Image 1 (cartoon, rainbow, N blue to C red):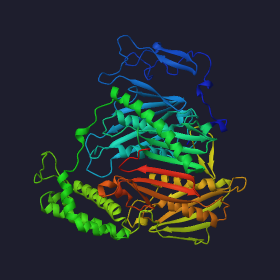
Image 2: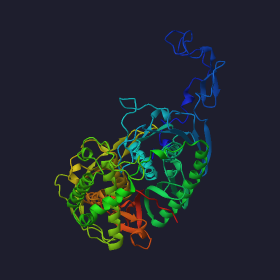
Image 3: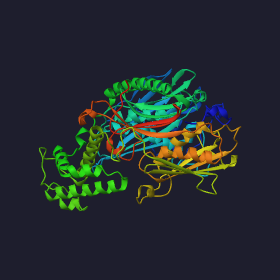
Image 4: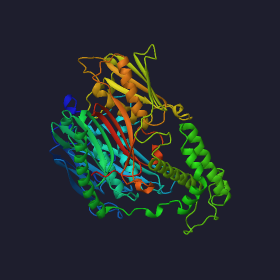
Length: 624
């Protein structure tokens, strides 16, 4: 969340108040051939048609249209639409058709004087089939939105800042589960903060704007999403509180979902009981439902037809073929307890399935060898246009693996590593293993391991945050999370932190921050580094546990100890012989991606919570 601008003197909610109060007598551009206002041989409007006008916010320039020139814009574009949607104790304004008309869809969402502009575009040609939807999200806060210019050497906005990356993830996480399988056109969502008033945070607006833009575009999706923030002041829950109200709030919860389901939760609080959190989620879900209902009405008026014809799913017969070929071998592979041997067994079995299907003529030999992926005419099912490619086989194999794994958990009551659904992996920890570090700890839970290091310093070691409002923000506590490829036994990129590393680090940081002493009691800057040396799921939770131990090893007088755990939930258990009730899994591993389930990361101390995060992979959680 952006810093509160009321704490400093540099904030100017109305930058135009510094303009000269008198009417301008001349214009900056002279009437010369190099001037954009020169009209002797150009298409620009006559300078005499530019008239100064006065408004409550200062002076501007109004251009009068020349006779015979249409002001409706090029033909073929839909007319502009706008709608006011009640959210909490005020309204947000949603507008489309005004800006960015060449995009698949674009919207501006306004709250107070904060304006977020979001566009959605998609590629003309589909990419290769994959189990990962080709979606990219970019969010940027421009300093001009607050009437500022960056204080650094480079004045132009460049690489995304950490908090911008976090908001990108907030947009991506609820949108991805709503995208329909089989649509492989690369989709890009771009979001900019065009105006910021210092009171109304743009992050929840960006989530809502992205959800509306996708709903209006051709991208096939199952549901419209929206996002809101929920705060708690005293016993009152506030929807989309202002930054000033957030200073007194015990809770910072950002929730996104549809009209009847929750897709993403990101929350931080100061030791709140679980009952309060559930009440906050219910309040947020009600606000999201109201927004989605209004957006659905807007989509009926000006939404574009979805590209349902572009959806390409593997033929149903392929599922039967893969299941018959893998069969018992897949069951035995999923019973291997150790991660790397199990992964190698699954890769070997996938290659064997592909080889057999190639020999039977379902896939061309050139495609199977990694060459040209031109599809043969040998395999034809009921739909003559439906063809099988190598990536289809790999996609189906992953889905069959997911089905077998869920069946093993529901029917047999055991996971791949032999644990029952509520069983925790063995835990081992050691402190003080680095002699020259201020504090260190090695936390191991099963095959997940975090090496946490704490460094103490004075105020000069605090991290400076350059934000929109121009008020210097310094962080006296920060956690940096690193996930090298070696922790999973692979070769990969190593350099600047990825979006995932930034997101996991912030979750662990916000979870540990409430247990730190006040600056008056402990006037030091605290830096925590968490390097993941082994990973088999829940590495962010291992960072919390290891970080807590390292803080105590460094002598930081923390208020209490805190732990974190990742939970999962398998839905639709009746398909595998269950009673239909969701099955909760404690301490999930990397196989969570095969389960297609709900994932919750909970960080608490004695039944009170400091941070929590929830994501949906392939399904939805309906609030009852």
